[in-house]
Length: 365
Image (tube, rainbow, N blue to C red; front, side, top):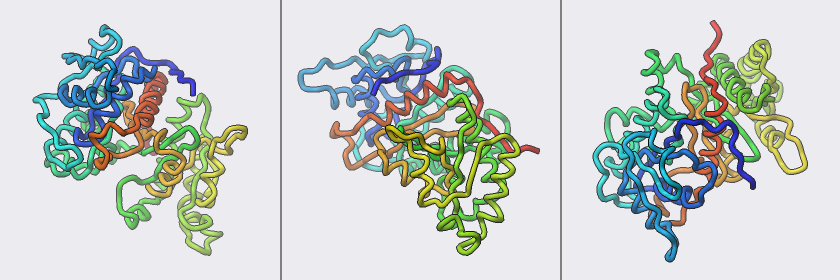
């Protein structure tokens, strides 16, 4: 596939290290070695030693070992020569890492990297952050403040709310998962299925639609065609299998239409994702599907190819993307990890940063 970057920003993009006991450092190293256009003007917010180890791990036996260059400021990236890996050391060096093992030390370091990069993006010093995978158990083991957050999304939401002097409740965010064939946005993120069902409210569905519309309109250049998945089998079948579609979801769709959104549904969740899938020789009916809960939306995207999946946080006053996979402790340190999803995340970060819009959309008063 030919790569192209639209409206690439002048400011650099930070790639956070992720959990150093996982595959984060090695997929970052591989992405640099592949010299993808998506790596232009990027640097690692992480640990110099971890990246040097990763470069040694993924460099072919007779290949040229790329230098890892420690920088002191993100602004130095544009002046560096090609074929090097710029790293901004995040505080004290990480030290020796036991690959594939949960550690409070690597969890704290991963959180530290994300915290720094988010604040730099909010202050306008970097164009975007692309986050390599962190391990939720390690993040929790790190203690306060990181143990408060189930993952990246909630941490970034809290940091952005603090920056804006508001509460997280007044800064709604949504997760979008996308690959070359399908985009899906989630009404709720990391919570139990029981709690996720309770989160299907008029306000949450409407808010999700407004955030999705604003974000994708900037990227596509037109209002996205949004399909809304039902909550129940067959979208409730006219109330036979549940009333949420009639009492909650359909009214939210109508309210979004009244505000200019091109949205339809609720559609049967077992077929709507196929109708939104972009395939060679056929035009999808929809640009994005709004799913009612985490697994409803993520299973179809990941089934189509996790190696090209990208996680985008919508609703933040900054651009954040990430690969659509975890730390893969089972293969960490073996040099086998595929950097394709990270490169896709970087490509999307360039595009979103270049669109120069804010995705923060709340409910109308």
